[in-house]
Length: 492
Image (cartoon, rainbow, N blue to C red):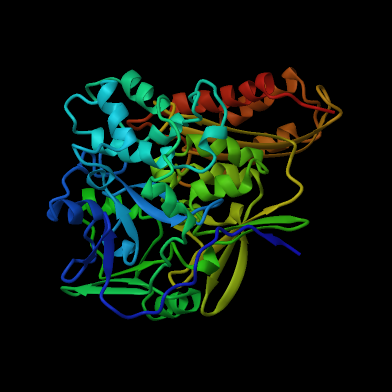
C-alpha cells in the first residue's frame, strides 16, 4: 500500500460564472481577454506596470508576481511565478499579488524597505521582480530554521530563490545584503496570516474569444474526453515551454487545455517497490515532497533552470516537450523510470528508455496525457547528475548526464549494474548502453573507468551549435565519468 503525500488542495470548484482573478485584493473579470494573453500583459494593461517584460522567456525575472498556491507544509504558500509565461486564464479564481500590492511609498513592505536602505535598486527595472521573488522566500514556511552556508543567509534565506532574477546595473551584493537582513514576518502581516487559510480551489474554466479557447477541465475524466474529441488541442501545465512559443514565436492555438491543477495528476506516493510522482506536480513540489529520498533528483533540482521556473514547471511537462536537452530525462533514464500514459481508451506504462522516438517525438498519442512517473525501488546506491552549461544556474544544458551505479565491496569492488542517461548529445535523450556494458561486471577502478570514459566519449551523435561544439560535448562526456569516480564515495 502506498502512502500519499499530496499537497493539501480543496476540490475543484464547479464550472460556471465569469472567469476572474483576484489582484491585490480586488476581483477583476476576464471578459473579452484573449486566450493567449499572458498575466504580464494583462496586468500592465490594467496599469500595474511594476512587473516588466525583459526577456519574455522566463530568464530574467523582471515579471515576477506572487500567486497563492497550496503549500506542502501550510494551507497556502505565496509562490513566485513568471507572469510573462503564465496565461492569465490559467489564474481564473486565483489570488495574485504584484509589487504594488506588497506596499506603498508611505508604508513599504519589509522586503522593499531593505532593498531601499541597502542600495539594492538602481535603474529599478528589475527591482519589482526581485522584490516579489524575495517576498516569496520571506514568507516561506520554515525559512528561519534553514541552514546558514554559502547559499543561505543567517536568516535562512535561500539564494536560489533569486536565481531566476537578473540585475544588469546595481550588482548582486546589495541585493543579497537586503535578503540576508530580512527578519520574520510580523504578527499582523496579512500575507503571512493568509497562509493559514486554504488556497483558492482550481476552477473549471472556459474562456473563448475570437475563435480561440482556453479550457481548464474539472477533472481528469473531462480532460481525457476533451482530448479524445480534440486531439489537436495544445496541452499546457506550467506553460514554461508553451509561454515562450507564444511570446517569441507568435504561436497561437485554437484550443489550449490546462492540466496543471487536475488532482488526479498531483499525487506523490511511496510504495514498497516504487515511488510514483504525479505529472502535474511542479519541480518545487516534487523536491519538497521527496525531501532528499531520491538523491539523484535532489542533485538535479538546483540545476534545473531557476526557482521561478521550478515553481511553475511540472515533471510531466518537461518530459512531454520531448526535448533532447531537458534536464529530467537523463536522470529518469538512469533511474530506470516508467512513464504512465492515460487516455479515454485506458492506461499504459512505458519504460522511459522506450519513450522517445525522434527529435521532439515520443510514443505518447495526441489523446493521451502523462499521468505519472514511476521510479522502481530500491534505488542504486551510487548516483550523480552532471550538467555542463555556460552558467552554473538558470541555463540550458550543453550536456547532461545522470548516473545510477551499484558497486559491491566498496572502492575497487565490482560494478553489479550501471545505468547512464544522456542529454544534449543526440536527437533524443538516450541510455549510454555501450558504456554501461563496459562497466558492468568490472572492478570499480581508475583503469576500468578510464576505459569506460573513452567509450562514453563516443556515445550519441553530438553536433556543433551555439552552446558547444561536437568535440567539446564528447570530451565532456568522458570527463564526466572520471569526475564521478574521483568525487563520489563508494561505500561497502
